[in-house]
Amino acid sequence: MERTIYGSDHEAFRDSVQEFLRREVVPHVNDHAAAKGLPRDLWLAAGQQGFLGLEIPEEHGGSDAGDYRFNAVLLEELAKVNLALASSLSIHFDVVAPYLVTLATEQQRAAWLPRFVTGELITAIGMTEPSTGSDLAALRTTAEPHPDGGWTLNGSKIFITNGGSADLVVVAARTTPGTRGRGISLLAVEASMPGFSRGLTLDKVGQPEADTSELFFEDVHVPESHLIGTVDGGFGQMMGFLPQERIGSAIANLAQARQILDETIDYARERQAFGQAIGSFQHNKFLIADLVTRVEVTQAYVDHCVAAHAEGRLTAVDAAKAKWWVAEVQNQVIDHCVQLHGGYGYMNEYRVARAWKDARVSKIWAGSNEIMKELIGRDVGL
Image 1 (cartoon, rainbow, N blue to C red):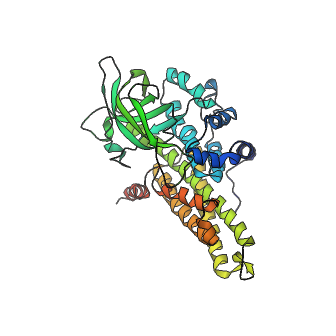
Image 2 (spheres, rainbow, N blue to C red):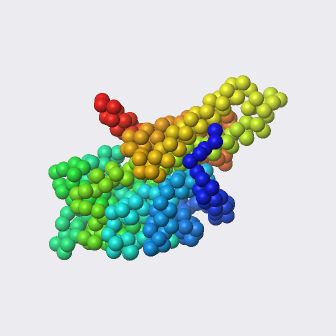
Image 3 (tube, one colour):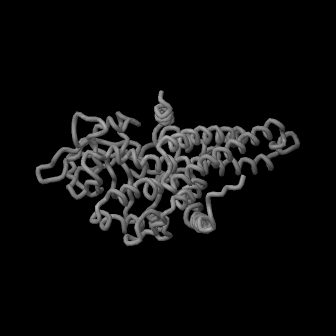
């Protein structure tokens, strides 16, 4: 089915992204996986192309596109290469960017955003903790008043994308003890601050290209100038930005599934068994028909959500629906694609095998699918 949410400007932007990826990324994907992270040169190249500043005001070097559909196009094309590329870059340009643009002071924006746009300053966001998982309101990292002003930060974060390379981390910490969501603030922690350290790059099942790490804060003095937003207002601020993170996750996850399905259809046309293409067997033909339909129907809902978000109308509940549903469809589709490849589908040299491993976490990250269903259930009065 023809998609209608993108115009000529979006498609021209897509062409530029595709050319950049063919030139700068695709030849090096195996190197990125072996290094367990993206090189600085890639960040700088992405910045030079303007891909990191889509939401950043022009006075700070960004393009201030004012249209979330450009974010969506970039997410789709990154995810077609691999999901780790999309998750690493999108944490920066799609997840952290709104915090710095919307909540930061003018002084903070002037200090961070020009380098954010160029890729000289890589960012991450520190929400998840070892003991709390998706329950952000129960986080244990604390920020107590420092004698010289600002806060003393103690605690740890886990599963942090870009954690191994980030120069600036937006950290959620409890500034008022004895409360849940109401006592949380957001602090910008620079990697050079004494007491900040990183654990080893985590050994994940998939997405080796993403440098996912545990972060530690031991008596880190965070000056008052590094408060993002308002004291004790962090939980509400995070909840306000999570819909964008979740629709972004849905966009990337579905694009990955569509790409792998397209490649699998090509494989099914070419692979011979019992004297004919495996795609011509009725079972496989019916299965592929099911997968194509499932992906296109899901795409229609995601496109509707993207359009709504571009107009400021996407609700947290609708974003939750998109996030969990796409993650389920993505994993179902890619699992079937592995089966259609037979034994080759289990070999790491085949993209379908790597995509299968990469996709599994999508039912967990950006809020687990169970949490998404809890939000939807509450919305219907249960």
